[in-house]
Length: 529
Image (spheres, rainbow, N blue to C red):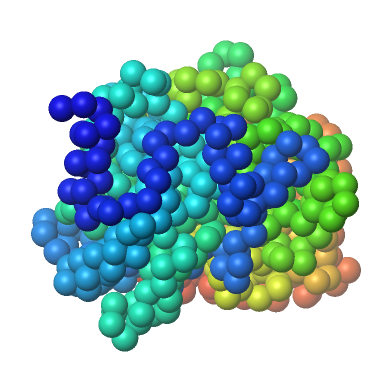
């Protein structure tokens, strides 16, 4: 059977028949041409294309479901994931494939995961050319030979102009993001936000890889000349991409990684950076990475010059750019690194009370990893207000965790102890007061603290212990004013700081009730009132 006949048979077996033009694994220039010809996107002055995603300018977590059936039904963390019946999903899938009859589609074959021992072949079938380009730049690219023999294990069907019917389909709205672990399918309907494609595959990997001895992580990673890797955990907007884009340390990846017995490997082949208020001066690597082949979402362009205005939040605060990792100078193109030497848990503290950096015991690292405290920044998800919202996202990845959180925390602890990894809590949020009163910590101070931590400059420095949170905070750090290291000293009224600190501690204690099966020592490592 010829390759083309095999491909057609593969699509037909998924219900994709009577299609229009099927564009198989087009090159980057071809996809850009198609996106522009089809009026899906426009060309910016820097060579990137930019597309608008409509009213959904972020992920839609309340519209995400997992099909409840088969062996997976007994292992899913249903307290964190919405079930949908196999019958509802099958009917919705059939309606989506019927919708595509007579329409052009764009097919991409790629790898999820850079390591040859753990990568999973996936296929993305997209209604939009720019979605196929996004996926090509974000996932690990196959060689021509690999494409010719591709046998995908997972299929992602992205149909943004097909809308679910809640009454008929069992969904909450016209948007549906559904994973079926038994049939190895993903359906994304009713939303043009391309991040749903990326995060659906991340969710799949969070389910599949633990059984293969790989700890999946929502983190960025870079490495030094000595091969020692640093990991940066955090939710969107907390600094994973910015802090890992260090000209002195080659980038492995900016968002999703696996930790195996052999070391770290990137799940992706590209980066997905927030670019609101992006500047060449403060983030030169990301600025220059957004060029031909990059895909921007909701970035406003000057109507005449087509120059991006990264300060314009007219469409959303959650403006984004996707580009291949090779656009970052000196990136680790294999996507593979050694064992970590340092872990940073990033939080954007909207209360303004967490220290800018603290050294953590293993128990404290587990506590703050399970807590996943940060402030969700405007636009990252549909429905968020203009101000940051304090939130706890378990393992800094709750929307993408199909398994119970202690599955991941125990894998992390075992690796920290085995490899003697140093752990730090880093606040990239506010000092001098809460959001609206204080100000965001200078990113150059944060960079200086991270470098000092990686280099071991903080290991022997005198520390003070926070009386409420029990965190061990250095009194000095090269390149950082001493007062910044004591958040209470940056507030106009220390009594206001104390009230805010106690309020945040109460929230931590309340949140910790959600993981009763965590080790007692982990609970004891949290704040005390």
